[in-house]
Image (tube, rainbow, N blue to C red; front, side, top):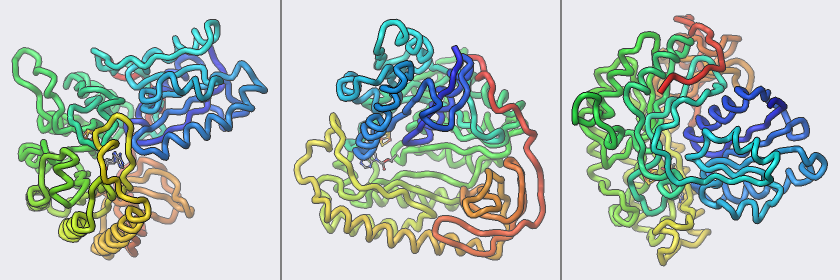
Length: 456
Ligand code: 5AD
Ligand code: SF4
């Protein structure tokens, strides 16, 4: 087909990875990337539905595109991702200039839908389920040394605030052999760091059996197998759910030297009453005891978390419990969110929605506490040396990279992405460190940036 495409991505890593596949599909059909809407023949919004502000942003963006479509009726506008799944036909009702609405399970059919839109007008595919894991899609990766690797789609949990199970469907795990084949292929292409992606990586494999047996593959087993792949130097994963966390995962992390010393361990609330209302089956004491076990088994591990403030019915006492657990947990970083009611979720219609000003006040207090903890955690690094993998140019010049513990480090100089180095940490800020180069320890072999995905 050919032409230029503009792709904008909102939301989580899962969406970033889906966007790599969208870009890969378009490029396999001859499209090249555009820098702005005025040059593009296809504009794709890969959307997020997790909080309400994402909805507003999409409709705002579609409004901006309207004059472009009027000036160039051949421009094709695509809405993909979780909001496409959530809003379905409403999108083309509100913005009739949208050509294709494509849900999270329909991605492999994107080129076909675009072609059909040429002759038949607006298209929509928001199928609710795919039986086969769509592994065989090409991906256009932004950097040569790192790759996202999807290990499961969807989620079988029902956290009462969360729209993900409604838009991404039940869990569908990818066969272990397909995951390993993709990582091997990536390693051959010069990728040195992989991030395994799933809504709840601990339940990976629950819907599969190991070939030739009736046993289910386990996440710990997958971690160990990825650890054995030659060429991969850093393995990350996101996210585990504290409810399904098991000792074998801690053991696998501790014993697999390429698995990085970082875990994202979403807590959501420190109040047991609120955790129950959220349908998160652990309680704060158990959460903290997991943290201790993880830290004992993997010395120096960084822990990050997600916390929601203002869940329906949250009292000042509940919020104080969250502050207490945050104080006790001493997270390296926390992603803090103001609760946003989502249509179709049980919490969306719960009574006692907390007034906005109360939520804002609690949010500010939580952020202030966490910033001070993050800063003190970062300060523990000052004077030490750490391995840094360079990711790209820093915001203030120089380069930016990450430690194995996922801390951002800014350094002076000009080093290629994919360079491993030893840095001495000279100063700390709540969200990043500053360091100086001690010595370069390795460079990832520059691979091709665009590749067909592994078979499977
Ligand atoms: N409101 C606010 N935050 C939410 N999250 C999920 N759903 C909501 C919601 N309705 C947060 C959770 C989750 C992270 C990805 O987003 O903390 O872990
Ligand atoms: Fe949402 Fe809970 Fe599933 Fe995470 S585990 S995606 S928060 S329902």
